[in-house]
Amino acid sequence: MTLTGRIDVPSFGVPIPLEVSAGSSIVFVGANGAGKTRLGVYLDTSLSQSGIEVHRIAAHRSLTLNPAVVPPSLEIATNRLFYGFDQGNFNHKYGHRYQSKPETALLSDFDHVLAALYAENNDVSIKYRQDALGKPNERIVPTPAKVDKLKSIWERLLPHRQLLVLGGNLKTKPPLGDEYSASDMSDGERVTLYLIAQALLAKPNTLLIFDEPELHINRSILAKLWDEIESARPDCCFLYITHDVEFASSRHAATKYALRAFRRAPQDAWDIERVPETSELPDDIVATIVGSRRPVLFVEGDGGSLDSALYRRVYDDFTVVPVGSCEQVIHTVSAFAARPELHRVGCAGLVDADGRTDVEAAYLETKGVYRLPVSEIENVLLLPGVFLALAASLKFSVHEAQAALTALKSIVFAQASKQMDEICLRYTRRRVDAQMKKIGLSGIDIATLDAEFRQAAASVDPAAIFNEARTNLSVAIGGQDYEKVLLAYDNKGLLSEVAKQLGYQQKALEEFVGRTLRSDDSSVLHSALKHELPSVVSRP
Image: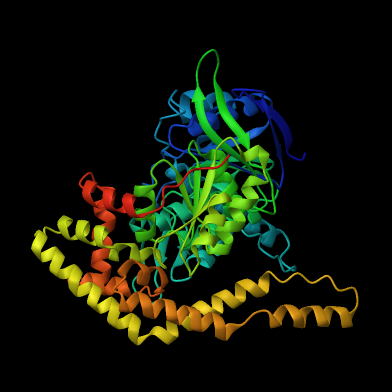
């Protein structure tokens, strides 16, 4: 029998059809309070009643284990694991496995997991012994027990640890240390063992529901763990319920749904929407957009702590999504505009100055993309109003803060003057690259194409671009136009100069800024940043 089934999930509008089948995976991603756990309970109950085998691993689970548990028979051990009752079936799950509280009960079944592993191992070992005794002249190849498969997967994921499978016990051994009991494993080691075992012990053709599959798992092995588990059970369907967009995006082949809200009356229903598949927007970006209750602000970078603290505090009406380069920001905003099904929320983009002229900045704004007032986002802390606010947060007096700002300006002017050619050369490279990308070639034969390219390339004059940039920067430095210098000076290292003037190491200052912006005491710094950064308007 192959797993296949369908259920219509009650939604705020038309019911959402959900297909479950062997070898497939499904992800529901939503914020806290969106009804994720209740949805898992609903699917467990409804699909079990329709005749589908369902095994749900709740988020609220105990990681306490007794590795020396004494196993009963395999049938009783698995009944206790799946249903919480020795002679159980799916009708006993509600009262026994979940103590009549399936949404909130603490799932304490690690002992049942280990008992089932030991019992299955015993059965496999006894059968091997009986086969060997019954056919003494034949070479009998032992069938791997599920605990052997678990050991293999666990050690691939955690190569710095060896899992020792003893007769009725589990131990762990690091390469250069002493072995220790499984009960002394770290939370990450235990939950990895627990999740692999749950999947391996599931009955054939089971729908496996994992609530918060990322819980306690190190990011470095999270995707690989679930790849291994899914690969080990191709006969099952995996359904994940998570708030982690990064995890959701790692399930590349999964059907994804965004979950936004839950209501009880007049009947249980969810605000749920299938995440559209697209080659224009990455899965994680689309999931964030669809799942968001706020407009989305696409920014450069990778979500580093300082960038995130700045953007999320200043643009607190937006869901901030880092997407990499400035080109990717512009592309993503454009792709969003081309997707009418995503227009339930608005979006905008924010890019570094990168030498863009005022005319270019104005053009980008018509597309919903805004230019920063500095060449690098970190350098916003060098702007006078922001620097003075930061100094005030660090309890500098007005006089001390002004003196530190004056010293900082002198350093910036001196460094920019010394590095003028390097700054202008980097600017020239960016301008030449941008102009070359705009060349449109339509020649229908090689001679025409060659002539067209040469003519277009001849119109790009790197020397003229460099000289103009050098003249403009020289005038700004000579005129002590601090803000204009920061607009052109693409040097992330300037943040270290801010730290020095304020008596901090750069890393410590970044951590202070992040903590301050996340706290309730950031009104002065927050106001200064809000004044200096662009006023962003989301576009439908």
